Length: 411
Image (tube, rainbow, N blue to C red; front, side, top):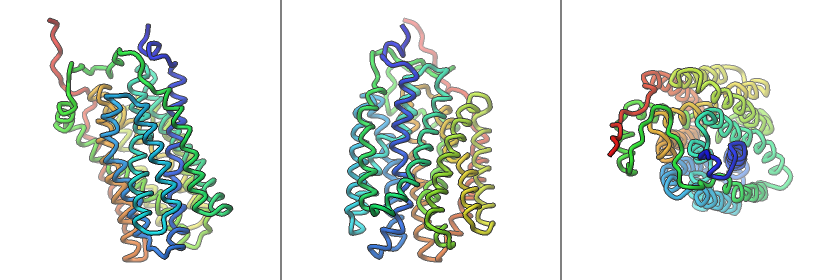
């Protein structure tokens, strides 16, 4: 009997459930930028206040991810996903009733941040690594990432309509209810039986390896450290664009619908880009794929900010940057699993994701602070270009092979 059969769910069911969880959890978060103008206008806050809340969200999402991953590695995915979805929904409700910066920071920052750490696509990808046969994994990583992207396509236009028709408070309440299906779907990602999944090709399992030993091994591994450093840029660029793009486009005189549809275009293109990245992950050196993605982003951002603003250039940029948006995730996930195997996959990918979210924290925060200081986002746009080039170079020296481990000798 196969390991998958022992766990009771076919690979197709596991992938479908994981993709739906990724779609549902990514949608409201991808729509956050739509609420910046109505909330700051109603309460007289600066954009730095709203940015701080979303920066806290990104940081705590990243900070919580390794811990959520370690708990899921030890006790299973279901409890972690359910708690995460409930925290996330509570954060959206708190955000809808927020009338002070502190309430905003608690809801949009703390509760949603920790909620995302326990129910977003990073845990879904780790579940795929543990539950799926090896031949399913690369494409499943791409599919899970693409599903999150499709959530970004669906939710911002819906959010724009809800804000226009019901108001921003009720729009947040509706988003909170959309998270509840995560609870039953998470059951499909339960680990059943006791048989350990097959390790990544070439990885040698270490019997009884502790969490502390796994972390020490990872952070002494040069290629893992380079991968983690490069992932910082991904978070910086994505979080800045997600939160500040609608406001940036409105500043240029474009109507509000352009921001919503630009985010939607990013999501739709990213579904294609993520699937393509998952396919390419098993067909070319992963470090080269990552380098091309980061360089492509840098070029796309530079061209966009040099062109005159218009609905056509905004949506075209959304399509181009969308192809590169989360396409870093499949090769990054695959490299973590290749280097260290599946046993601590959720935790080790979680630490890489923490670097991603530190980048997101700074991207969102600097966007708000520098806008209030200079009345422009130009400095952060050009910083995004420079970081893209730097990450392209950082990923090139990565060595794509399992960490060296002593082969266990039979007794």
